[in-house]
Structure formats: C-alpha cells, structure tokens
Image (cartoon, rainbow, N blue to C red; front, side, top):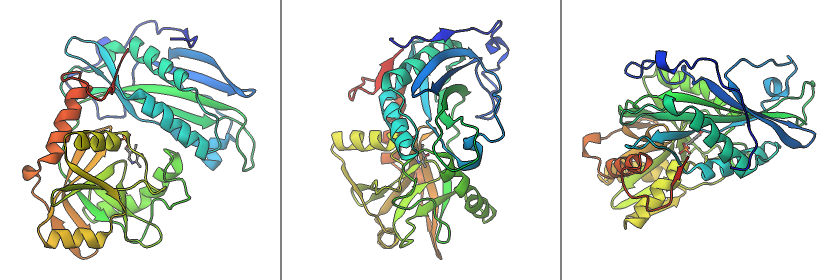
Length: 352
Ligand SMILES: *Cc1c(COP(=O)(O)O)cnc(C)c1O
C-alpha cells in the first residue's frame, strides 16, 4: 500500500453492541469509521480514516444545487477462514473515474481508491457479518465542495468512503412495469454515470409504479420507448430459447460489474450470450411462443433478482421463478466466488 493515510481510531468501537443476528434494515447502520480525502489546488490530499462524523457544508455547496456528485457500491466478504476479501475492486475504481469524467470531476488514482478501501475494510473487519449472503457494503462517493452560486464545475471536492454491515439479502421475486411515459436516461445524457441525478429523476415514476402494485420499473429508451434499458439499480437479463440476452451498453445503461461478471461466467461455461438492442416487441413475441424462460435483474446487492411478473403496456407476463436454472446457476456461482468458497477462475478476488 503506497497511499499515506492518517488513521485516527474511535475510542470505543460500537461493534460489540451491534446485534448481527437481528440487523436493522440495510442502509441505516454504519461502522465506526470513514475514509475522507480532499481535492484542493488540483490534487488529492489529506487522506484520513477517522470516526464517522457529520459534515459541515456551506448552504451554497455546489452539490446541493447542481448535483455534481457520484458514487459507487461494492462489497467486502469474510471467507470461511475469516479473511476479508473484495470482489473486483479495480472495476469499481475504473467506473468511478468514468462517472467522474462525465460529471467534469477529477479522477481518483486507482491505487488510492483501492488502498483507501483496503485500509478502511481492514480496520472495520469485525463489522463484516459472517452469515451466508451477508457482507460489508462499501459506499465510496465524491462530491463538489465549492460554495458559489453558479453552474460550473467545482474546484474542490471530497472523496468519502462509508461502510455498512449488510445482512443476507432477502431474495423475493419482483414484479416489473415497463415504463412508457417517463424515462431514466437517454443516450448522450448521464445514464452511464453513477450520479445522483439519475436516481432523483426515478423517484416519482417509481412511486407511481409502486401505487400500481409493482416493485420496480423496467426502463425503456427515451426516443422510441421500445428498447429495454435496465431496472432501478440493476441491469436486466432474459433467457430466450437457449440464449441469454441483455441490453447492450448503448450510452444510457449503467455498466454493471455484476452484469459483466455474469456475461463472462456464462460465456466461459459455453452458454450463448448476446448483448444487443432488445425491443419489447421481441420480448412479447418470445413470451407468446413460450420461449421467454427467465427474467432477472443483476447487481452488487443481490447478484440476481428473479422477476416473476413483467407488464409491458396491456401485456402481463408471468414467470415461474422456481423453474429458473440460469439465474440460480449464476447466483450460486458468484456467491461462492465472492465468499472464497470456490476457485477464483477469473481473478475476481482481491485479498486485503
Ligand atoms: C449500480 C447500478 C447497477 C448495477 O451495477 P453493479 O456494479 O452490478 O452493482 C445497475 N444499474 C444502475 C442504474 C446502477 O446504479
């Protein structure tokens, strides 16, 4: 590790009071420490791990007004012999820099990103839940710090990493509604970046879909309202006949690392995988012919989320998730790799 990180430890860890057998809902419990760095005078500096604390922001902070902020989501796991490991951290380092580029923000050197994650997870190792399917969720984020009213890129930024214990993901099947009125992202927009605006824009249509009884939205392209993009915070896969199909990264779809892992895994095991422009007409036709066998989402949180209902306009399609084979295969396989239970044949695991 080459990054020089100042470490200030909390006086007494809260971990002994944390009930790992009865965890609060994901997202609300944080570990003792956070990593913080500042971008000032054109360079990253003040690398520090310190007790988690509130920030103090000027009310004119650019992030609050114009949304110059990006994030990542990744996980650390404990192997059966209690060693902490990371899953493809270099992919997250690369992706945060692609998001940074699109949002006119400075790069974070990949080694600083990875060193910071390793140092923080190493310090919080007692917070990594042991139960099957649980993990330490890692949330890196970068945001503008200039306090000036006016639309322009900030000159100063903060890079922060938070860690959150995450219990076994309850994997109930989800229902999806294809959204034909609102759009998440268009080619040329910011859909490819993991940046706040995409999620802010999705909240209202999501609330409407929930009122109609759906768990999530399946987003369609903004021009034709015809080509499938992705789900809330997941990419999407379909098994059509003997082929696994996923929308191609056309500039509006977020390049999921789980998506990439699933494609790599399936191809290496001899499955037919296609990433292409996929229209809702093709899906409906495949369903009517009995060829649409599986629909599932992919993301760091659950790896795979099975879809049991998909509504495209008036067409309601139902799926028997108990018959899903490919979804189960990729989920079990990637779960085992992430826990260090099987050979890491693709070089996805990084030890801390
Ligand atoms: C993070 C995210 C994904 C999934 O990415 P993973 O790297 O697989 O976790 C997919 N879509 C959106 C919009 C996302 O924000």
